[in-house]
Length: 343
Image 1 (cartoon, rainbow, N blue to C red):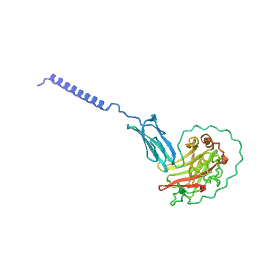
Image 2: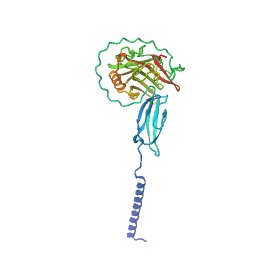
Image 3: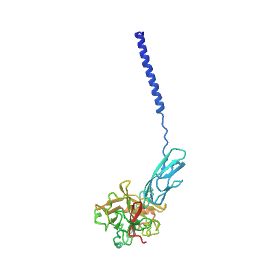
Image 4: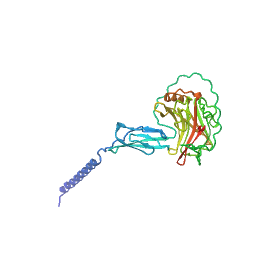
């Protein structure tokens, strides 16, 4: 039998051993789990997000020129990172995976129907005060666009089952393609209180209301702001400009994946031979009947951007253009022009 003193010693010895074992266990767990986890940073792709028009190209690069394998969810991309947009507008993911490593990176490509490849632009600088020019004669008002003349995007062949909200009745373009970008005269009554001083106001009136929500649809204007077919995007390079050297595109895009109307302003970059995002904010309006669309942009920003980026002197009284609505009938891209192409 242990006496009282021996029992006390044994009790505290047991407590000490328990504490020691617990301490050893905790230290072992911390050593196993508490060490730093090695995580490699993702591959940096440039640009990280870009707009590209259908069929056009954009060069992607990776930081530090590491060797990567390229892949994309839509369109094609070469071994060197040269992306080519498909004929189907949409949002696609470009992936660059480093060879011999688990490192990878992603970029987003927005393929839209009428142009892009956003490039940062410097803030516009004031243009010299223009000399007085004679007041232009009003352009002859075109007759309403024939109903049901929506055609296939590729060849213009008439289609059956025209999507609702695509067929153009009229637009802010004269029969001779002239566009009044110097005033808001002649805008529909629905836009009378919406137009603001100093803005270019463009509008499209449709035969049928735009559904809510619509399918993928692009309402746009291609503008030749000096009336010279030898400047701007080359004549005939796409279906909307068989007779225009357009320097600017103003439009609004509805993408069901985002559920939002996205107004945009593009300027032809003569040096790069492609479109770039213009500065300023395009205002967008859809009336209660959902048959009238309005687009507005500062006239000064429009003129300055074209002068800087396209390298031409805008002659606003000679401006020409064409309106278009592009959408889809099932998987087929369809389009309506106003005025019609001179086919």
